[in-house]
Length: 301
Image (cartoon, rainbow, N blue to C red; front, side, top):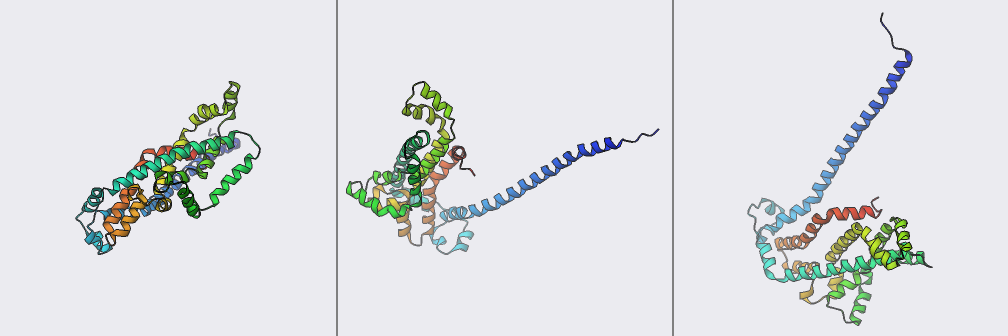
C-alpha cells in the first residue's frame, strides 16, 4: 500500500527547508554586495590614480614637449630622466630631504612622548578640574593653525629660534589630535592592570612606563607615522620661520622650485614626485601598523 506523509511531517519538512532557502538568499545577497563594493572601490581607485599617473608621465617627458600641452604629453613615447637628473644633481634637494627628515622625526618623537603623558594624566588620574582641562584642550582643535602663525613667529623671534630646526619642531609638538587619540585608547585599557600594579607599589610613572606604554604600541606607531607625515607636508610654518636655504624643508624647497621653473612642467612634476616618494614608501612599509593603531583608538566608525 502507498503511504502518505502525515500533515505534521510535511509541515516539519517545510520548516526545515525554509532556513536553508533563507541562508542561500542571504549568501547570494552578500556576494552581490561584495561585487558591487569591489566595483565601486575599483572605480574610485582609478579616479584617484589618474592624477598620480599623469604626474609620473609628465615627469618622464621632456620640458619642451610638456610645454606644448596635454596631447603632446600623451603622444610622447620617448621617456627621459632629464628632470630627475637635474633635480638630484643640484644638491639642494638632498638638504631639503635632510631638513624634513630631522624636523619630522624629532617632532614625531616629542609628540608621542608629551601627548601620551598628557593623555595618561587625563585618562587614568583623578584630579579636580580634569574634565575642564580636557574640554579646553579640545577647544584648541577649533583654532586654525594658520591663525597662530604671527604669534608663533614673534615668540620664536623673541627667544632667538628663527632659522633653526627648533622653530619648525616646537610649534608642532603640542598636538591636540594626538592627545585625544591617546586618551581614547587609554580609556579602553582594562583598569584591573593598573590596580594590580598599584597593589604592588607601582607609582604613576611606573604604571605609565611599564604597563600603559607597552600595551599602546599600535597607537604609538600610528601617531608617530601620522605626525611624521603631517610635519613633512607642512608648508606654512617652515615658510615663515626659515629663510636659510640650507634649512628649508621639502615643501618650502619645492615651492621655490615651482616658482622659478616657470613653464618647465616636467621639472615641477618630478620635484613633486620626489617630495612625496618617501611618504609613499613609509605608508607601504607601515600601513598595517597605521590601520591597527587607528582601529584600536575606537575612531574607526
